[in-house]
Image 1 (cartoon, helix red, strand yellow):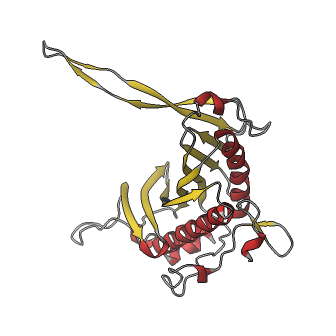
Image 2: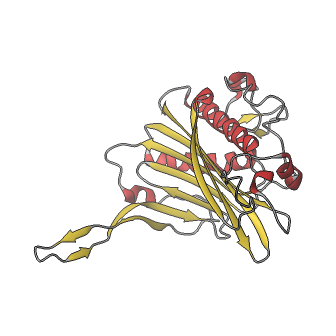
Image 3: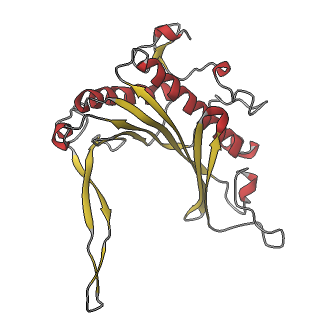
Length: 283
């Protein structure tokens, strides 16, 4: 796809439609990391239950929270709710007593769509677009995220973007009966060979630097039970640090390229973590 056809974050395909889903693997040093695996494969029953785009930004010193409260993301979104960061603080008296004083800091606003499938979170240095529920494809996700970003970018007078992250939460429903985690995940807990390999609950998290793609991935997995059914949670959070100035004429191209690279990295991690048995479950 020619780079000079970029509009905002979104390029266009041969029919002129928004397209952020296709990338040129030759652009990436990590293109040979998974020989034989299709990193852009489309699954009929995609297990994605939540997709998140998060940007850490620099804004002018005179920006205040009230400037963001009046943001309008469309008639489908309800009035904003206030976001707080809570932290506890212990106070020790001379008599030896201890008191806990919770501290609440106002960090931004959340705008939720009436049906609960979209949430936009904004702050003085943070923007996040959260897609929940049935996931369609990257092009639709990135197009909606861009529209929300442009509204925030203008209201917050964003100076630069310092970190970009994409996070995809997958829920893989398992067959009924006895299952072994390693039959479905290549990245998993290592149980002693002297113990039964079946588990009833599990949680693990690893952070993996992906040097070839200039990114880092946090992979979280858990075994969830609901009645007689079980599902594997596979949460992939990929981030990269960057310096993208909004005054740079190449800002849109740089932002698009960064998102393409992170999506490529996310697909790489996902395919590396799952097995052919999992591929069979999701189509």
